[in-house]
Length: 155
Image (tube, rainbow, N blue to C red; front, side, top):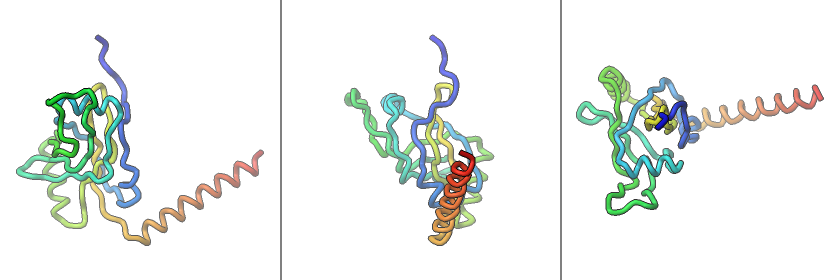
């Protein structure tokens, strides 16, 4: 049986990049049950309200919604259960130290399969103020307008 290669995105947290300044990113593996993997392979997940935290020296992913597998039986998983993340000790210590500083949190940015294994991209994030969000939207619109104008000019 051939092994999977490459990267297949399952879910992205677009809201996180809007609501937070992402200072650093990390890739982590996840401890999943069989029906969770089957549900992810079907391309169903939501990262919108999820976050990660350190408890007892381990990293945990909280409030990420992976719906129950439709053909699952009594072995099905809870949709919003807490899932353990697989990171190196140095990375866990670094994230724990940064989040204790205050104002920083760890949010999931993307959920994907990499070479057949489920991974999550975590972002060390600082919350944006309302005026930051408005400024970012204004910049995005200005870039879009300039691109539109240059396209029309060169036709």
